[in-house]
Length: 163
Image 1 (cartoon, rainbow, N blue to C red):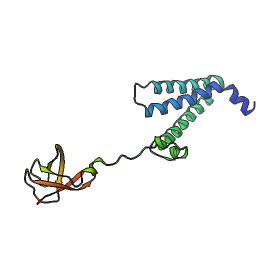
Image 2 (image 1 turned 90 degrees about the horizontal axis):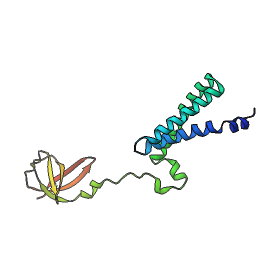
Image 3 (image 1 turned 120 degrees about the horizontal axis):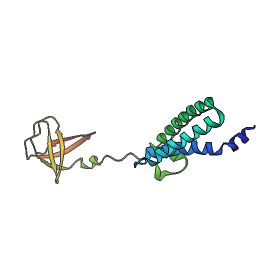
Image 4 (image 1 turned 60 degrees about the vertical axis):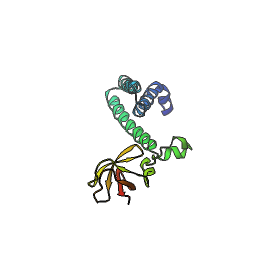
């Protein structure tokens, strides 16, 4: 039996394996009730059972190992692509590329407000009705003092008292 005859006689098995892996990958990226995941597991199981019945236990075990390897490769490829890897850029799907969201807090740099609590050195500042956890540059700032945001370092908002 040649390779192509073997492939031709096992098309349902190959489609079940590839479809099952594809549905498991879809389940990872699509939140929901798990229908694609359950269907994927059932299709992979059906492919393994078909091999086991038609070709014996050793071929069934090799099929299990092959399914695990295929799933690992598919997950690695899809997770790398979803995180903005080369797949989306290569095929020109720019609208699907994941972009790192801009830090919305950067728009607050330079804004002035008042200290809603004493800053020793941390506390709460009020900036046009938006209350933020802030840290002074090191000095004590009393409650209701005028403050200005001078820097944002990750989640840390640094303020100084306006004179």
